[in-house]
Image 1 (cartoon, helix red, strand yellow):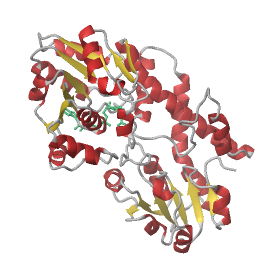
Image 2 (cartoon, helix red, strand yellow; image 1 turned 120 degrees about the vertical axis):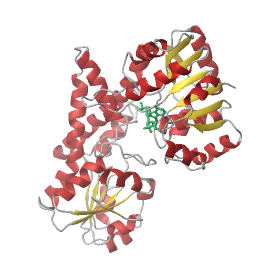
Image 3 (spheres, protein in one colour; image 1 turned 45 degrees about the vertical axis):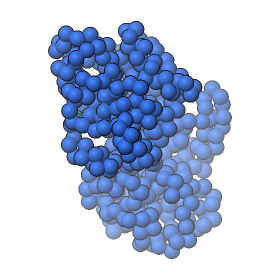
Image 4 (cartoon, helix red, strand yellow; image 1 turned 135 degrees about the vertical axis):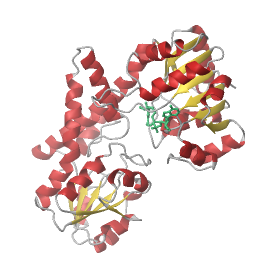
Length: 434
Ligand SMILES: NC(=O)c1ccc[n+]([C@@H]2O[C@H](COP(=O)([O-])OP(=O)(O)OC[C@H]3O[C@@H](n4cnc5c(N)ncnc54)[C@H](O)[C@@H]3O)[C@@H](O)[C@H]2O)c1
């Protein structure tokens, strides 16, 4: 058992804290958002993430997990202090380190003996050195700063954390390496791979991994657009490519572009780092540009098919979150697509199983929000799929057809089979489908 403090109780901090508690450690999750803490203490989860709803109360009950705004006491009792606050994009795309630095200052003020400070937030190369300098400027105690980037995916965050492909730790200090080894032992005993490396390589590994995945998506999106004009089908191409062991099947789905809190921000931040060091990263420049184009392409496809002026038309939208199994709307393609349709004169009725509240915070009442999938289809001139939630995979198509004014479907995630849709009498359009 180790004493762990996690500063920043968002997607990453709450999942990491709860999972460390589940592994038997004693965890204090710190946040400065009082409303979030109130919810957590009342047993309510501030985010939707499968699995957490039973793990949080269980670990709270066993007194392995507590929530507080008292950073000082949490740090004083901890062997390892994680920094898991947000690193949102600044104006130029570089990661904004305001929160990380604030927390480093507070940790420096609270140090009362040797601790490991582990940076879990995604931070530019060199940030751990900065964190070390900030803490050292405020404390005479011994401490070590390590980089421990997080690779969990929202929606499957708990299984990702509990069964990671690898755990990366950038560390130079022997005591820190020993403590991090002990912390993760419950996972490594079950086969997880713990990789130690130098701090800068660890910081870089996080950005490089997300940039590689974003590159695969943008590449597939551009190939899909090419498939459409040459008469190929991206789903066949995907199967053919993904069966090659050198390529593998993950992150090869074409769609309406990547969003979320990580890929767009991390790609831009790595580009900014390259710029600062006068280093070329032209591949990533193109990845960003392709994604910007892909996000508005659905609106162009719809206007091509239904006319430039969409005045008086009504669209049903299935899915708002940037991907299934999350309520996260950060940089979701739905935002631009819905705005684009409304700007062209249309009205939009949208439904998402979990993201209505978060969508309202960004899109306000640009669309109206339906309580269920079928309600979106009433009187609709077309149905648009933007997030491939499982409940949309095989709907009652007869019911959908009966509700719609026109049987037109735009499938932004290639969830449905074009032939089957046409057999059902729908005018179907996917991304890169024959
Ligand atoms: N969300 C993901 O899927 C994911 C995956 C891997 C890595 N990351 C990285 O992890 C970091 C956190 O991401 P997130 O999605 O959990 O962010 P988030 O916005 O959900 O959570 C951040 C939390 O930090 C809190 N916070 C901010 N300043 C604070 C302070 N001074 N003291 C205490 N708490 C403070 C906020 O109130 C918030 O609850 C980011 O760097 C992100 O890039 C995120």
